[in-house]
Image (tube, rainbow, N blue to C red; front, side):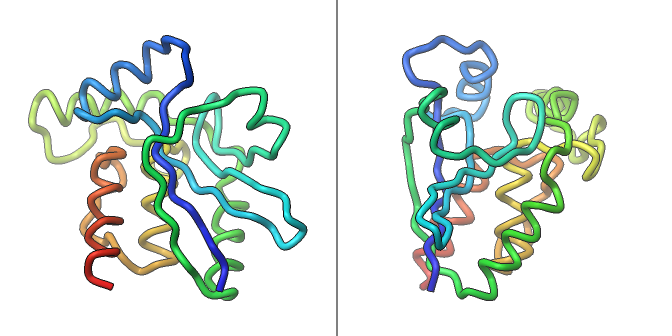
Length: 166
């Protein structure tokens, strides 16, 4: 078995308006969700949608931009699932960050819309979409999530439901 962590984070000691807005809208202490895993070589990696794109962050980048982990969930996956996860991550690496999609998620929350009018599909990604894809395609859970409108809070709900049922 291989360990993968789903981490819910917020910036450390710095006021970031986007993080503050996401926490306010979601009603959570965190504004971001990401995957963390360790390669066989022992290198700790994070995979996330952050900044300008979907990316991998290694130990040096993680030290340079520290974050506060609010919640962390350890999931054990098979070597086959791990390999599929890495393939999924590589497939989406460097896709643009979905800033426009975030505005659409805000519209969904405020106006009660069912569909995100500003979704760009897989052409851009936000953090909850990246982790939601992992849940759906690798763990085969969370199929009720609409990845165009889901926020970190919905991702946490799916993980907690999964962990309680196992």
